[in-house]
Length: 130
Image (cartoon, rainbow, N blue to C red; front, side):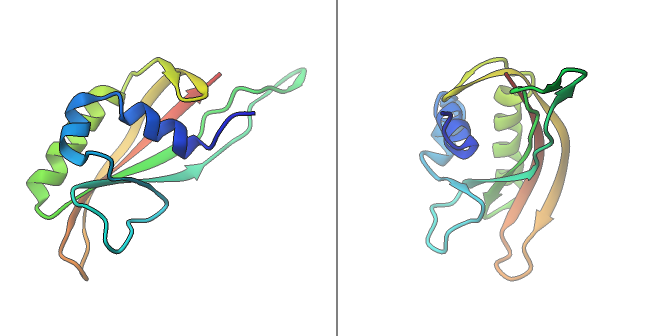
């Protein structure tokens, strides 16, 4: 059985030295914890369509996962997002318990949290998993 996609993505991010240099281990599923170390990355699955062929359902899937890069300043969030995108966009290979046939960036937007004044870059990636 495969592990959670969040664990697989976390393990993959830990192989990107320039990203680890920025966030260390501050990569979280679903939401940013109250006392999280900043800068940080938050993962959230926003789409998980099944894959079908004329023969029926296959094991291949292509979920879209938002990776939100949080930082105190906009420039730092943008730098983290650029670094993460450099490694992840177009990635093919092992990803924790899965194999990624391809990973593609599908969208990227700026965000400023009005309550905390923290900046974020929200990037959507499609993970084509075999």
